[in-house]
Image 1 (cartoon, rainbow, N blue to C red):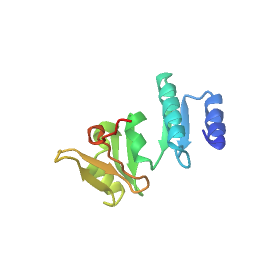
Image 2: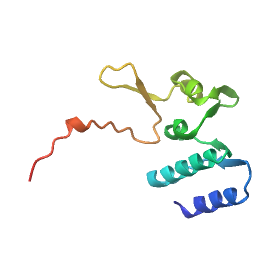
Image 3: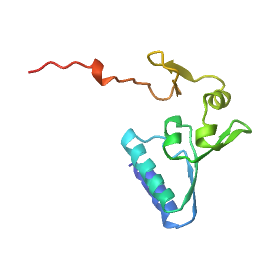
Length: 131
């Protein structure tokens, strides 16, 4: 984990508050560090802590957020993540700049921002030569 991120998280945890405020905890960290932070947030939630997290990292929201507030100058939507974190609300929040990808004609769309590349992997499509 990035040294500064560790210090800030350690400081927040050491205060033993019931509410922890985190501003963009995933900015400037690699994927492994992001996974460690998410794991820590889940542990803290299991201990009964409340985290208020501001983030632009769309991919992590559904992995640890129970409740979501979407803001763009004003509150656009708020509520349980599974009912608030929708394509319609994301388009409102990001002015329709999200990419939609439909895989194999499926009704489900993948919504991603342009900050991180989108990679689709289908294991059955990968063929390896025996050596």
